[in-house]
Image (cartoon, rainbow, N blue to C red; front, side, top):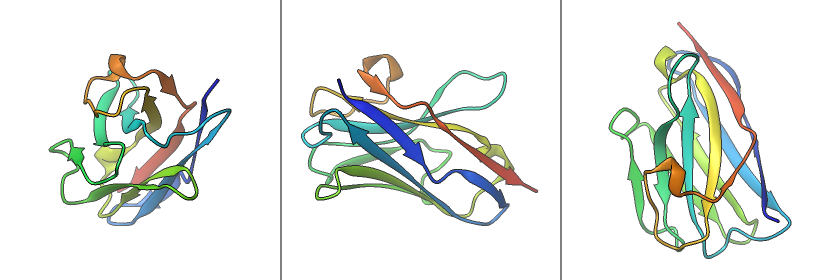
Length: 124
């Protein structure tokens, strides 16, 4: 059974940067589409970014476009989310998700595996 574990969250001031990483156990994420989602208190889980199986096709939510970068490391079998120019509204629990299929999607319900999440807090 594929298990995903996120790391790299924390507290940062507005304008700062964080790098989230998603590692896998019990399987591999190679060949799978991967995504990052986030959920702020009192809000629904929302799409942040996704990358296809090869790493060459990425999609971002408008709210993070130009500030966040999703990438995958095939040798380490990880997916990363580089977050720059962070804003207080980026505060949320960030989740990594994997899809059995190679094609990425922005729809959370179409992902098959989820991590437990990592907290990102951006202070103003």
